[in-house]
Image (cartoon, rainbow, N blue to C red; front, side, top):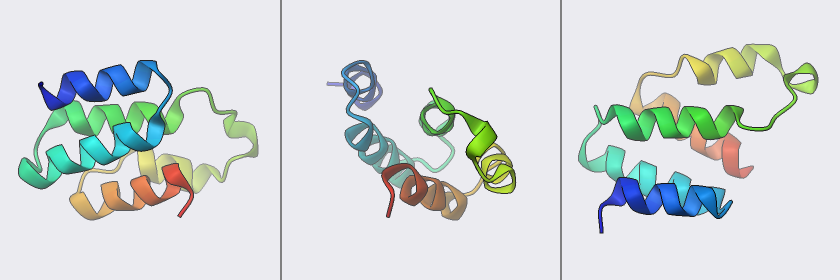
Amino acid sequence: MDKHLLASIYDIKGEKEKVVKICRNILDSNPKDKEAEETLRRIATKNIDISELNKDMYNFFIKANSKDELNELERWLIGN
């Protein structure tokens, strides 16, 4: 099964950690995969109230464009 499709299925089911893991795997194989990057960004901003969020961190994650920055995003998403 296509990894992007699998990530979408887990996303619909609300299994954020699995989506992040799949997207990270995709980016390990293809660091320029825009769909995986966009999925991580969307998850980061989905259903959150940014009024209580550190706006500097929020903006950092929205603009993340390197593998290291996306790894930071992953840690933030899953709370590690």
